[in-house]
Amino acid sequence: MVSRLRFDGLADRGYSSSTPLPAQPGFRVRIHRLTPYLRRHRGALIVGLVSIVLGDLLLLSAPWWLRRAIDGLEAGDLEASRRAALLLLAVTAVGGVFKFVMRRWMIGASRWMELEIRRDFTAHLFGLSPSFFDRNKVGDLMALATNDLNAIRMLLGPGIMYVVNTAVTLTVALALMLALSPKLALVALLPLPLLAIAVHHGSRLTYARYAKVQAQFG
Image (cartoon, rainbow, N blue to C red; front, side, top):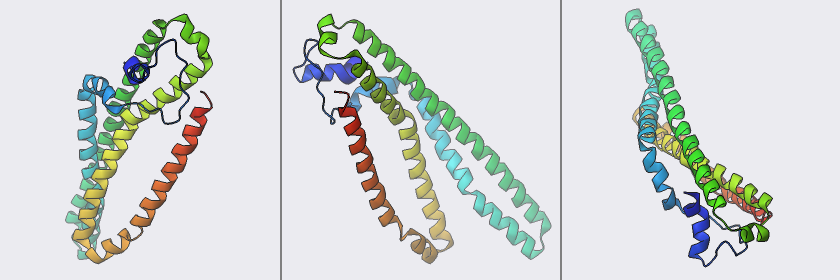
């Protein structure tokens, strides 16, 4: 419940409904308190995760079948080339279906979790004393709740989805690249450390600006 996600965290620090809400940019949700929502929708998340793995495996195999089709043409074996082309179309189509299932179930589950958290948050607000709203602007509370809950939804849905998708894609693609040409694979991987550093610094800058905007609501 949101009361456990956010306002019970205030109680843990000695705050209550008679205490003004602290304006701290480092005020974060405790991840383990999202566990009840994840458990409630674990079936949809499992379907989404399995779809990620299967979809990535199929789509990453597409270049292999394309290679087989071209090799068949060069060798004059039209039947082998035709089979490879049909398999290429098949794995691409089925992989696309799995990608649709991935997004449908994982994004859908995150939307349902967001709805449940908003309901719990609303129920908690109704239980607060009037003095709490005297000391805290309702507009600020709603702005914080809206931004925070949207961030939670992004974590529970797209966040998990893209992390797993990137991990599977990188692992399988790296294995295929090394199998085809180790030297070319190493050359292609040379920019990755610089890219990782750039993404890390960009993420820190984005978070710092986001926290600054959040602090303005305090």
